[in-house]
Image 1 (cartoon, rainbow, N blue to C red):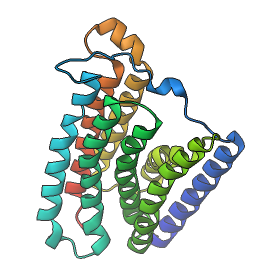
Image 2: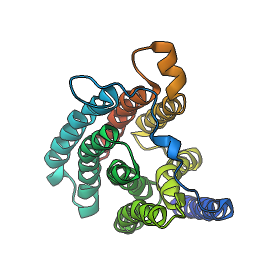
Image 3: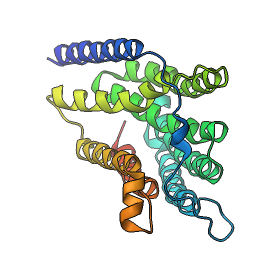
Image 4: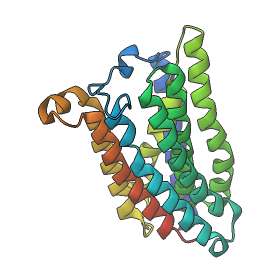
Length: 254
């Protein structure tokens, strides 16, 4: 029975990967929209440009520090090297995302955007490897970790290189950012045995969707609230999603 379920997971996972790659290939190169850097709230306060978009990243400092502390405490409780590295890599990614995102929002352009996106790959990819580890197998999860983390880094520098060459292409990064969420939903839906952190996973995905909606409606939210913009709320709501991911890594016992 377990082998049948594992094969089903592998087939569905492979099908989803192939379908996504074909879809991105058919879509053609996706350049960075210059308007992406034009945020609704550009106020300077206390000498800090784009103040609220900068300081709203501070929540990640506390979350990353907590996650790293918990990961180090659990080091001896996990016998497998990859199982030890996944939560540590994720937590380091959160810490660096705090710095990288603040740096980008202080002076938004394509050059600083690299340091906003790069740390996020250290969050997306380890979580993706964790799901493969649990739903498909430890061996596959271990291989995935060592392949996915470099792939995430490559996706950012590939975009930057193509952007500098005048034919920007975000497709690799789009795969890194969004495919793990699609895979998570598929794996949870088809798995007869749900891991103990399933509730946290669904909450993390739900809050991430809310964060992206806040980002999309940046101007509308700022014009309505007159205080915080949608992008500032994206950072704060995104931190709720990160909190539940940390709950996942904390509940994950290997």
